[in-house]
Image (cartoon, rainbow, N blue to C red; front, side, top):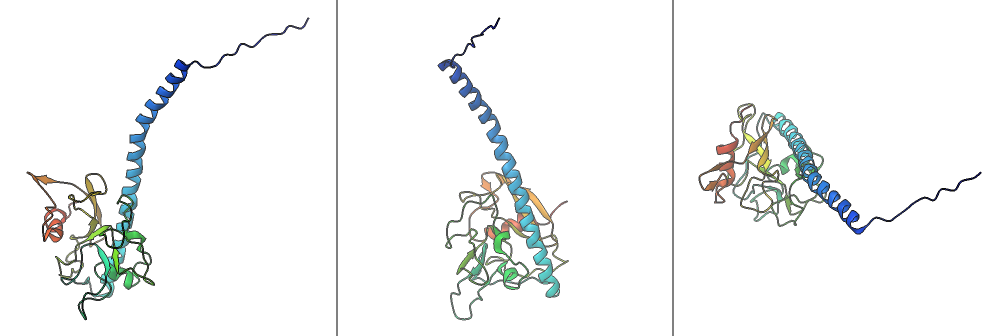
Length: 228
């Protein structure tokens, strides 16, 4: 004898669907912060890798120049690789770490792009602007803040100045989108070391007061000398 069994079926009720949606929403709210943290940790590692590559270029440059880096005059900038000349004989086309590109110590400008920095906002910014030595922008920006700039003119010498910071995530806390890595910065030293420095405050003033001269002062006050 053949027996037929009817399969009972029914649709989800509205309440059951709402419960499932609620559970998914809770899981997403739990996972998203962890995913964002993991992504930022990966960005910090990529940023450190960029700075290490720049550090190797510094070492090659100093090896070719009897231990010396370049110097700078008052027409430079704390985060530009190239600046359009503002007067006859005033400055050359490359400034700051742009010398590393001009001398082929770095073959790509991509290392000057911090993955946690805000998106490109144009050549008039003080952030990374994509370019190449074949067709360099007039104002070629970097996400990294250079020690040797229009506030600090003096060349450094390796190994004497090996423990002095030379490049860092732009530390200006009074500008939107900075610091790039939440409350800390990656800092490159002339000897190639890359360290993470926390944001520090003293009273009601930040470590970057936003006044003329802050650029060099940040390095001498908070980055030098490094401690392992």
